Image (cartoon, rainbow, N blue to C red; front, side, top):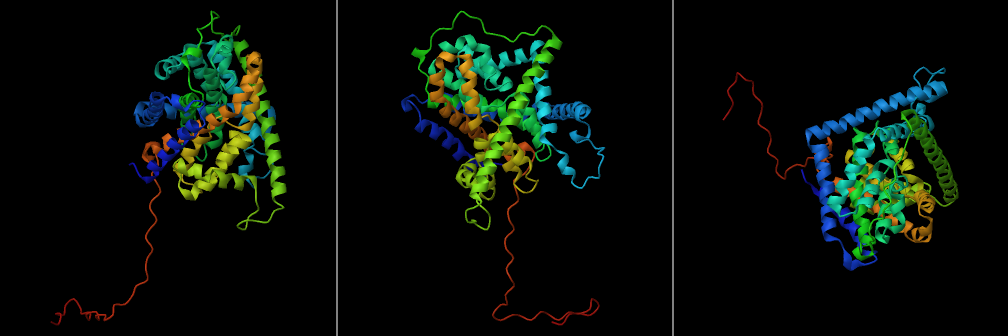
Length: 461
């Protein structure tokens, strides 16, 4: 049923679009048709994926596939690292079984395996056909030209810098609006390898986590396109005709070559993720040490997480989250922006069931599922400087705005999900709090109760 909390999420939709319109380079060129169409497409996809039995069964199958992939990966990790991989046969007596979940052994190897499988599926043309299919959909429904539509689709599965590689020869001739859109969409989505990693982190606290993460990355692409078009509107006269160069393609000599090169690419991603997490978590720990010298507030020490929770709590409420969970959800939004979404997902995965509402956890999964964070600014600048060096200065001038567009795009997606009825995702809204029981009071002139009589005795008149 559509309730007050669902209507509350409409505030998030209006807020995300309104902020981008207020900061637009040309507010008179607001894309009304695209705005209405993108939001409706997102809502229709969510309703179809979780409402139609066949598609819902397919999403559940994705969840089982992720579980199988995770288990298979652990077999390889256990072969190399032994009991350090968290196998049940530990050489010591376990006092805390939860400590067996080690990020380096349970999540990062999944990225490695998925990158290898993605390369193999690309070599077999399966992933290529899927990408081209999504590209046609974006081209027909959102008015994108062929090359940017293909890069947008590739970004969903390959990543924020890997997607544009396929149209590298087109990048110098793209309009400012199209180039900005590619950067913004890259920060709105996540790659296929990280989708599986996030699902692995959340599977113990979020039922069917893989379905939500996959859906989040797909439907955030239209949101990224919309907000990018609002911030940097399209000017058709600035779009030149496509060059004669064909779209570039990844070429592997054989299936074994694809697995080897995919593994090599995955290793660079794993090292990048691990190094980024170490540095950013260390910096926040340093800041928390400094803030800890300040007087306590509310009986607790001041920390980066608490400050971010206060700042982003109103935004979390606008997404459709009840106010009791807003500080926690706001802290997760801030952690995602400052410390990367990996850290935010790890924090949310550590929140036990019941500590926050199930609806809050679902909405936050969509709000966190994107690459919009400070670290991605550097990744995009470095990546695009190699892909299109002649436009590096232009990219430097728009990358921060693109990060904001990507961050708000995931918030827009989360708001659309918040509008949906809770029963669609298999859980019911929390029951209303029972009314307080008032102490019994005596009437001014209480009537004495009638004297009790045995069943066989007649009652006195």
